[in-house]
Each structure stands twice: as structure tokens, then as C-alpha cells.
Amino acid sequence: MEELIERVAQAAGIDQATARQSVAEILAFLQKEAPAEVVAEVMAKLPGAAELSATAGESSGGLLGALGGMMGGGLMGLAGKLQGLGLGMGEMQTIGREVLGYAREKAGEDAVGQIAGAIPGLSQLL
Image (tube, rainbow, N blue to C red):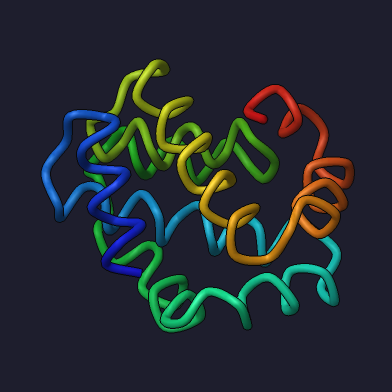
């Protein structure tokens, strides 16, 4: 996961701690919203992903993070959580592309395509 976190930090121009928490939130979101069997397959090919996703929510992100959590599920809820970490929409898109690109490299196009197809709006990040 350190390779992915470094890639995210570099691409989005953010610090390592924010990159780590952003990746954790995205992985936890995918576990919640995508088909369990496909996500399990992808997570198995990303050493440390399950442990990192378990840390999602540890940084409350203050009021914006709390509001994001109340926005419910889906991409809007995730966006609220990431906004609570101080990220803007452009940074969120960059981070999403990096995470999904990394997953595609490690787990393959088919698995990532199935995940993107199962979550409305996610395919816009591919």
C-alpha cells in the first residue's frame, strides 16, 4: 500500500497522511458499495488493503467530514468524507483515478470494470 499512497500523494499534491486516509476511505467505500466477491478478489491482490480500509473513519475531518457521513452512501457520501479531509473535487478525482488505476494494474481490468459497473457514477473516474 505504501507504493499506492506515494503515488496518490504525488499525483494529487497532498501529504502522506492525507493520502493514506483518502485511500483508506476509498477502499472502505468499495467494500461497502461494490459486489463483495469482486472486491474481495481485488483486495486480496493489494497487500495491506484490508488493514488500511479498516482505518477508514479514524480521522473525523471535523464538521465537513461529519456532514459527509450524514449525506449517506454512494459517491456523495464518499465525496463528503474526502472533503472533510480538506480535498477539493479535482484532488478527489485524481485520487480516485490513481486508486482504480493501481487496482487495475494489480487485479486486472475485468475486476475493476465489474466494480465500476456496480457503483453508479464510478465509471466517470476511469
